[in-house]
Length: 343
Image 1 (cartoon, rainbow, N blue to C red):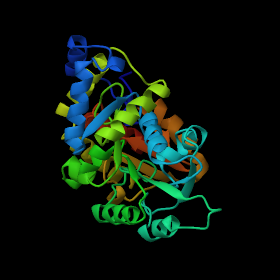
Image 2: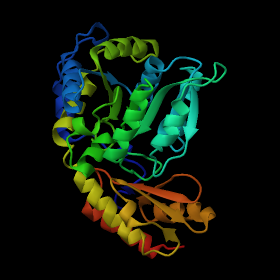
Image 3: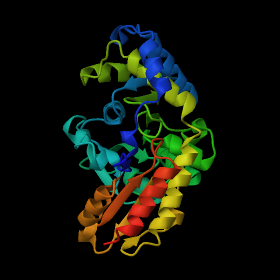
């Protein structure tokens, strides 16, 4: 049987031949001492791409988000998060367990909070109410099906936060997907945030790593926080080299993933037992409702037996994620299996 079409996540991507060559040939040093030239170059690349003064290479997006929480928010205060956000649902309550911050959960439209609600939550309360010391946004929004945060809504949210003196961190694990979808430079998409986290190991195809971006002073503190969390790395240039190739080669091609996701969504919309509006698919994540909801397991089993791997995203929802290891032929195979194995 041919290799499975793996649509579980864009984290399953494998490093390209160019990445492997760069990893093998990378100039390295001890990054804890600040001696790894390849890491330094990657951090400079990332800061320039995002329009920030500095950047820090971290092993994972979860660590990067936690560092931002620890530095921006005060212990015993609240951080506003959207109900479906990755930081709230999939990072093991680290904001509470390790940062000592209480999540103040709000529900947004396609992952986007209402600025008026944020304004109300940030207003000064009596001393016995925990104050808000951070607003955490996500773009693209995973649980909302890769939804892009509209620029006008982003600007409104940042304006509210600035009015109250509340810093804003962006979990931008897939923010480069947002930039490609919006046809805007990444620096414009993230302009105004106090810090931004983006991943190399998803649609960009690198094997490991994320970048946390901010001011030079913020990144100096972030380096200390990374070490405290066990994230200090030594000859990590062998991994950072793949990240440099990812930034060089794999940003513009994200548009291919988006086009394939829309084609998959259009096919799903025609299959009985699945519910999806293809117009909602903006980037590389496709989430379809399953009727009845308890049939999700059967759908996944049937797809797997046909050589297609997918995942779930909450009760009665099945998720497909396109990426650089899934070409047009693979999408055709997935559609054929879906059509032939309708429960």
